[in-house]
Length: 260
Image (cartoon, rainbow, N blue to C red; front, side, top):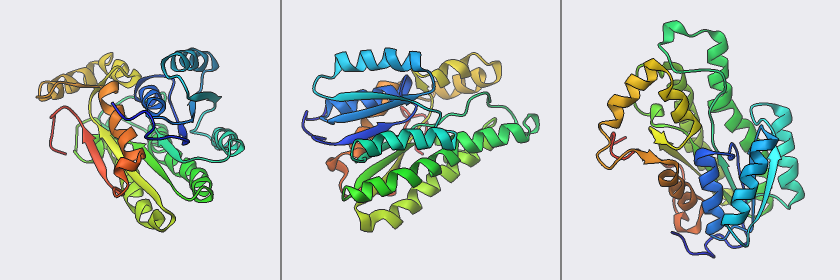
């Protein structure tokens, strides 16, 4: 899909990359020539499985798994200590999804839900970027890509809290892009909608409320419902020199469900 030397010599970190969009993005970064790709997840067992799969699929790239929960300060410190030991980062890709919460009407949520959404969808991005940016400055520039969601742009029942947190994610990306342009660091976001081949999709389809909601949206995907493999190339493009003049942008990949 991309030239095999497009990202030659680049060091990348993709959080939440033992499955779904994170895993496919890590794989495609390697196929585009990245020299060293850090993958991340909470489970060492899942990390070992994905590390084996990626290493077989993408020759010439060094993959390294870091077991860490990027929703905690300790986990973030663990991640970026490892990338610092490798000489710093050129590319940081942040995927996000809070654990232990589901989409539901606001009146059915509570403070614990709000805090999990805020941490998983917004604060984790802030904390990771606070560590990634100095490493990129030290290397003369870089690219940050945040996976958010079209819920940041389109009001949807059941996504009152998650949509608000994702909107904060997107505004952070746009403003950080302006602040870091002088450092040759570009910051962009990808906003998928319903995406098959992800744990989030499986979890949402197992819940009656979100299954009905998503089934209606899937019917509007004139180009077909996107898969993780369909979404990942946009992140790779934004991380690459092909997007050298793109920053502060928020790009929807949703199969035509909306024009967001």
